[in-house]
Length: 215
View 1: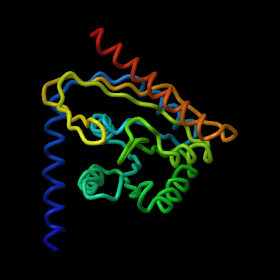
View 2: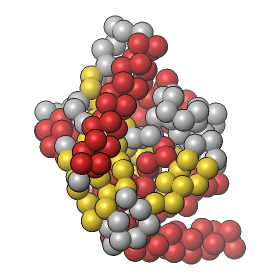
View 3: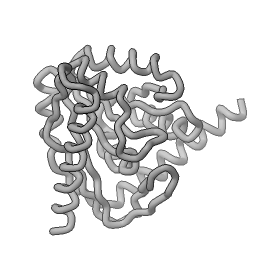
View 4: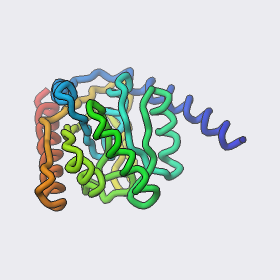
């Protein structure tokens, strides 16, 4: 009971703290039409972002009904509770724990059409910028459109674990880029699919950094 109360309190505190931090930033968001048009085509969409850049897009999508995948470890519990508070639908699991159950749920959601699934393909335990095969196979199997995304901020803290996780400081500027749609054909290998996803993620990241540095 005590643990449950602690989680509830932490959820409200973290939600308030994140909204306070991110609402004080100004935003330059480009490419939103890429996932809007993809959804309007009747297909489901995966918005793919590296784990280190998670929070800016998490905040940007807070008012949209989104499905998201989170690990089962203790650190993921709080952010999952915050996401639920913001109206998201959470799928819990990872490649190490409850992976098969989460994979089946993802397939069911993507097959139903016009759903948005937000994932960090290298999370929750890395290695950094190396996609897990589960999400690649799910996208191929269901014909889901992947929208690679990137964020860059002028003021941020970095916390190093298996990668450097960024938390934006107040009163900065956040640049978000939603890239061009990527469709992975079921006929190509998982290795080639992973390479294509990494290339698309790298491309949108380079474009976003180039744009931000010119401003």
